[in-house]
Length: 442
Image (tube, rainbow, N blue to C red):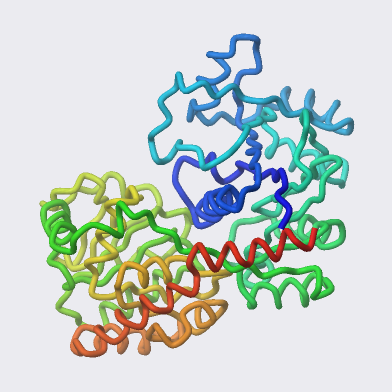
């Protein structure tokens, strides 16, 4: 395949705490570079655009998040119909960017248009069309990793729509549904191609947005944990989990992910309590839906979790402990600690209501951990027969799965073994093949 200059947006790459979409954008950049393409990263952070290159570089890496003021919005909107130019960011190495949360994926050049993504939404609300952006010697392909109302001038513009959860399960997200629908509808009309990450999501896009099936390409995602994680001995990881969290290897259940309605955490807690398991349940994730009821059984509200004591557990990130330390909630963890917890869990419990892809399922499988997941959305498509599938709306079924995983070592061994095999179907090499086919169509 002929190599191309491809722009990947930095919308999710700039987030302080990783998400599944930021992992997607990072892995996309890695594989495009490995295939020989030149990668431009386009950010929209509120950095300096003065003449001092050092100050510009420093401000680009500054994690400070500030909302656009009313005056700034009005001034920006006055000129936005003409388009918003992006400027190249000087990366000289003077700023040490080895922090995993701020580290840059493989790239050739970096550009930034001040407040680009926030401005694009305002532009779309006011003018009803996509904001145009451009930069010097621009890429021939712009790959937007999230449905945003932006286009790169004089380029083929393709958009990844991971799922249509705001339309399929509107009660599980806080999106402005009308605005979201208008954006994805216009993407369906104007995109050169639409990319998605499962056959489930592809079917939703075709049916809900009335798109020709040939214009939607499913590349899936890659599960690509670093060798520094995969190469550690189990004994070392087990000792780390015991020392930091006070947990015994293979004697606790684990959920990890954002605590929001579609993740089904409330039913997981109910099922765990109903199972009367002798092993603790560990919940790793931030409460992103502030008025959610999912943690009421823990006695935690959206604002009080950070005020609770750790009740003798040594790790300072633990924000709530309940039921004599049988249920433990931890805030966001860095990758090395999170993967250690996953690897040592008896089973990951992830019966979410709906996923576009369900990356946690494959991450657990790659780490050799058994998985309980739901039979809705893309979860059964991704898991295949390598996970214990349950009805995510059935608390009794989830409770029985927990009991089975606790009491049947042969069942755990079975899912650990076939899970590793299943994860290989989503290897970086397979992902590269799908990307080659995608960009070959352009």
